Length: 168
Image (tube, rainbow, N blue to C red; front, side, top):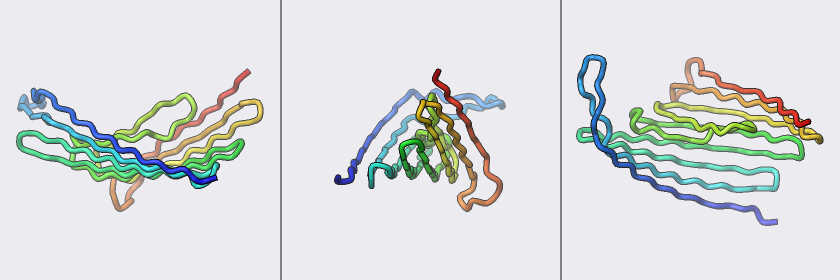
């Protein structure tokens, strides 16, 4: 069987009225007027069990005085067997400010629909393991670390979850 590969390209432009917001010193701080985002993804199945996805997200925020950019790159490796799914996920971002943030889908356990927002420069590796028994009992675990420096120094923030799903 020939391995499958596909590409996807998406673009979006948001324009909004610039009303700004007030800081605690009552100073008016302008918000961005214009935000555009582009997304490119490629998915490749090497075998029935093993696939790889790479995605690049680009975001640009434009106000009267400032243009800010955000770039994120995601790599997702997935391995399936009859009873086990293992996923390795890595996101790296280079972001100018919160206004140029990027979003990626998180690796989700059954019943979750989480996306991750990145508004600073980070590296964020994650792993998910899901085991399904013959009688549909599922146990899964995911863990993500977020390094808030590009050089991977310092202690990462850790996020994790555990699921036990029993169908009677």
